[in-house]
Image 1 (tube, rainbow, N blue to C red):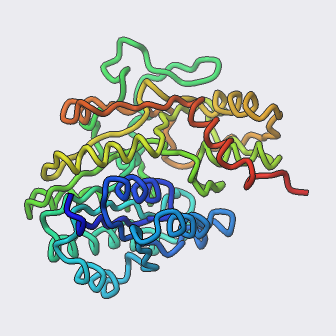
Image 2: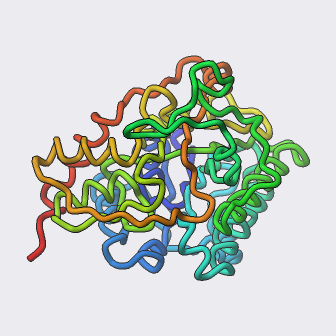
Length: 360
């Protein structure tokens, strides 16, 4: 690889961003990270990613350049893109406001970050490095609450879909996005998703929207409003009470480790195409309900989790989401999820043993 090849990574101190930084640096890229720790403004000091930014700079040295920029700042972004120009060989966009609840509190900021910030990046990429594949970390929330129309069966610990149903192996990208409740967060992410597709179709840029389920891993700055498995483990390790929100805890999520996510990003970078759209998640390989995750966390920590139940679910919350990876694996057959839920939780626990200690 050309030593001057540059990878731009937004949200570079976050979970997927930091994993992308490490992964592409290991491939020989000079990585430029863009992150202004807006997560701490969204969710408080506990959710700050500053610790991870420091760790990246320490571990990677000159292979990593950190830019404290806001993706809403068009002039600052333009200066960064002009500086590196067509040396940029890939743009990985993971920066976002990621919470349903937070978006309802401040819709302008949510939309400006998720939709307008994405537009700013796309246009700069088009002007300065149009040949660079553009990878966008989207979300399954672009489908709104349409998955709740599936004929789910309530079991002891989870909702489930009958094995005879066409979507039993996972929801495909053909699921409609219209006539459903998205939440304002889902709407802003859908706007970004469509923009990424449009820059692929209209301008011929090689873009990908990865519509992910629950992405997780040990580098997550988990918070109450975002980071399901990480926050659950954090509560158990620090002896904080945990609130199960809606559905009796039987809502199901597929879970994908951050390393598996960035391996998918690499696979697309190696074989890109315009306007690609992929569901991406743990699929049938790695999924769990909230109740099942609590049981696993208690097993790992040896502690009973103090918990309460809120009857009312979050607006638009999925009762069941297991995505299909079939389209992506058909186009990139070397990729498969490698971590199951128990593997993921053990790693989160072990990596944060010194950080997440009981508070007095």
